[in-house]
Length: 265
Image (cartoon, rainbow, N blue to C red; front, side):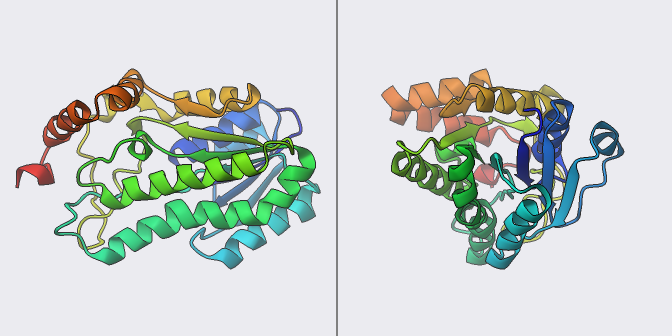
């Protein structure tokens, strides 16, 4: 990763910030995209080769500007990590449709906009295109209709881009963490679009953002097509392949055990 130019969206916290730190340790040049800016002191101690770009990935013009600023600064793009994402927690029968639109705009369209702007440069460098998806992109999770839909859509989109460019040297990785200790659940949207405010899970029992980042970077180095994380995530994908109805019951029962689960109301 030495001197590779890496763009990371959603880089101000969680998996995005952990990825920035991991790439910085390996000597990469970083272009960090977020709405609030990245101010982590540890990151700037690791690297001076950082371009911080305020970016709202739901805006196509912001994504185009992000890519152009990266080219103006470093002259090339080797890796684009589409990590920016938001979640939601509400039954579909109760949720306002605008919540689903907001989730799709960030998770799916943000990936499309950034990829569209960056792909000519990634093809030129024979680089890596990465989407940070979720186990929710393999199996629909109750009370996460918008989130699962956005991750299914992201994975389908990235598969098409991979197949279209099979003979052009473009590497496409779909990375699917399971439940990860990050702030995504704290800022997840409730049924009316307000922030959930607190996580329903015990974060201490989840895989850390740092471990997720290490495994994603390793998968990029190895040019893997897919990465499924956590034993629970791998089991869910495997069971769903052969026993989908059983998996649905197991998923329902698991999600119903969450504190204040919408399934129990």
